[in-house]
Image 1 (cartoon, rainbow, N blue to C red):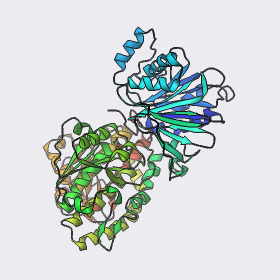
Image 2: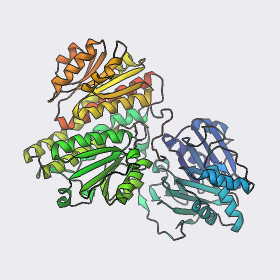
Image 3: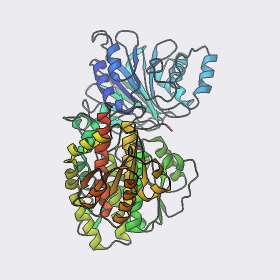
Image 4: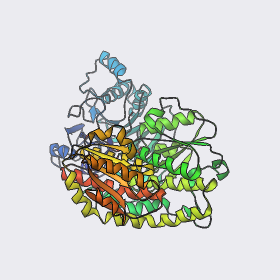
Length: 611
Ligand code: F6R
């Protein structure tokens, strides 16, 4: 949700920043801008639309040559996406430029005060007032760090900011609260970014800024203080992945690359976490002894979007294997509804980015109520990873496509490990535990077998690409997969789609079914197979066009299906890891055939750091 890149060093900042900005485009892509100091004065270039539009308005390389710069790619919150509202914002006298990610909640009050002081506000954004406020304080004592500190003390809300000041063209000030911000430490050069992906090509040495910290970076080094003026001893971390993780390679989009990475990413999620000897799993980072875990009476899982769907699968598996009741909540609802958390309730938050504002607020709410909160995240050093009392990384590598794919299967893998772990403490026998573990080793190959059907799925996509609606059906553990399939289709192809438990269809949605309605159904061989087959017969009787995801060698489904996608047989607890793959491919191909940008669907951003 907005991306920030800043550079200070000996090289020309502009190409480095533009390249970094492109890597952050997934965080927002409705407008972008850059501020540099090529000579004595700050120059700002902005444009609405993608970063390629910004590149078009940049002057010649010579004119835009600067050793310092800050830039921003925007996902609009306050004020429409336009050139005027794009960042960087300049202060009243044009000498200070600011980029901001987050929301200034009290900006109306602050704007009023600034207008009274004679400041002219030119954009509709909340962010612009930061530039004027900093100028206001800078004029008082001439220290930019103190000015930023004083300005931010007045601010309610969230921010990741980078500031440059033309009086000192060798200095960047950066600060954060609630929005991620990272310092990259290079050789005689420094970077400020929202995400390490923007600078990994230049350095792997990073400092994750914490909330309420302000970093002042100049050519000789950096100093970090808090809003309350305490000095901070920063810890430099080494990023343990490389540039290939943030490049498309031979693929035409990150989404398809990430879909095809799943045999490896799922394996990475369980590697080193299986014990055949004890027929169980281990999740070292949970930070909670088994004796305590055994006493847990209730689990709450809190998340948003795709991560919430993974949570629903987790509920199904934990209840099935461990018989522990699990509640799955939308983080945005949980945080405001005063949730009941009893003494022996354990809370899990799931977030790929580790920065989702609602999930973070839910985590804090649960902790405030005294709960132990464990995080299932992908992003090392993210706020949720840092603030949880323990947890488990999903290790799927950088996910850049806005529509989550590999993070989902990795989240589900970790939740499956958790279910087996808890199951073995309660109801699951060693024989069942061992059988599960052995089957988990087979899952990556089974995913590969589904990916091999990519061409066939592309051909099926051709048959539904012009639909205006689609229905996704599943039952049991595959019902959340139906929800996920529908979400994938709607977010990247803009076709309205709904996921339903198959039997629930006759309580309303069946009215929608006619010959133009594709129904994508998961009908796998398990204990409720016959039930879902009856549901599909009902669809067929109303001329619905059925695409069935079925178990290999199941000929019966052919009788009523327009198309069948076969997936390998597996234990029912692992079905979601397989059944979701055709759904992802189908959504991808439909969107491509409709000529859409699958990596950057309209109105969306990868990391939702605002409420
Ligand atoms: C959908 C998607 C979103 C995210 C949601 C939560 O494809 O990616 O629904 O799942 O915004 O994001 P995280 O997991 O980063 O908290």
